[in-house]
Length: 257
Length: 156
Image 1: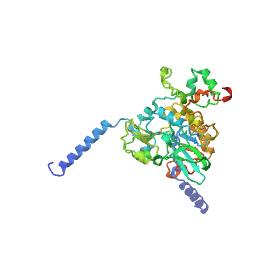
Image 2: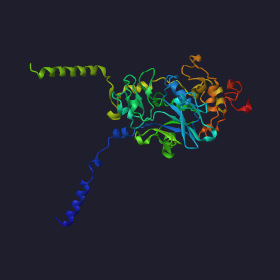
Image 3: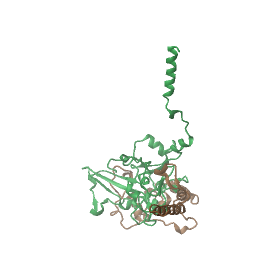
Image 4: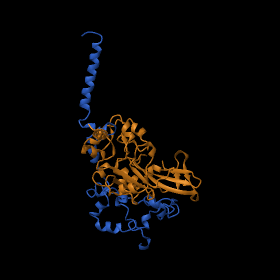
C-alpha cells in the first residue's frame, strides 16, 4: 500500500467512525410529535389592563362550582400598593370576588389600612391562577396519580382518585391549590378544560371586559398569546423554582411574588 | 415442608397474592402511564374525558345575540359594550328553557367594581370614571339615574 493511500483510507475511516451513533438513528415521528404536541395551552395576563373589577373571579366560581361564599378560589386578583417610601402593601379581599371597591386595604388580623392618596406611587392589580407548569411539582408529589398532566399541558385532578392527602397543596410553590369544601378533594384551576377543549375561552377570559386575560395555544404561531410570548417582554412568577410556569405576565413588578 | 422457614413464607406469599388480587379488582382498567411518563402522566386516562364533559355555564355574548339580536347590537356599540351580558344577567346555563334562572344583578356594588374611585396610577383603573361611594348618592341604585346599557350621560 502506498503511503498516500494509507493516509487517505485512514482519514475516511476516522471521519466515518467519529460520526456519533445517534446521528444515524432514524427518528420516530411519534416521538417527535410527543415532544412537540400540536397544542400547549398557555395564559397571558396584562397587568396594565386589569382594573380589579373581579368579574373573572365571580365567573370562575360560578362556572366551576367553587362554593361562592367559602373563602377559596381557583383564580384571584391581588392589589399591590407601593408607597413613595418603598413600602409594599398588598391585599386580596375574598380573592377579589366582589372586586376592589374600597381604598381600605384588608390586612387580615391587623385590620383595615388606609394609605393616603398622596403617599401612593404605584398601585396595580395582578390576577393569579394555576400556572400549569411544564414541570409541575404538585404532580410529582402526588402519591396515587390523582393529579396529572395531560398532553396539552394542563394539570388536572382526578376527583374519584384523590385521597385528600394534601401533598400537592404543600408542593405547589404558588399556593394555587386548596381543598374543595364540597367535593373534599384537592382543587385547582384547570384552565376551564371543559371549555378550551370545545374551542371556547375560559370563563375568566370571557368575563374580563378589559382584555387583561387571554388563553391561547403556544404551538400556533398565529395565536395572539404565542405571538405576545415570543415578541413582548413577558415574565413568569417564581422563575427560580424551575417549574416553567405557562402563565405569562406583561408588566410584572419585582414586588409581585 | 413443615419447617420454620417455609411456613411463614407461605403466609407472606399468600398475602402478596391477596394484595395483587385486590389491586386487580380495585384499580380501573384505564389506569396507566400517559404521554409524559411516570413522573407527570401516571393517571386514570378516562378522567381527561370526564373533565371535558364538565357542564359549561357561561355561554358568551354570541349565544345571547342568537335570540336578542336587537338588544345585543345596540348595547355592544355603547360604552358598556365590552362587558359580557352574563356579567350582570347571570350565567345563561338553563336559559331559555328556564327563564327564571337568570338573576339580574342591579346592585350598586356591581357598578362600584369598576367605578369606585381608587388611586391606581399604574393600572387601567385610572382611566375609568370613578366616584366616591360614600359621597355620591349613597344608598341609591346607580340604575335609578344611569342607564347601565348606555352609560353616556349626554344621551340620557
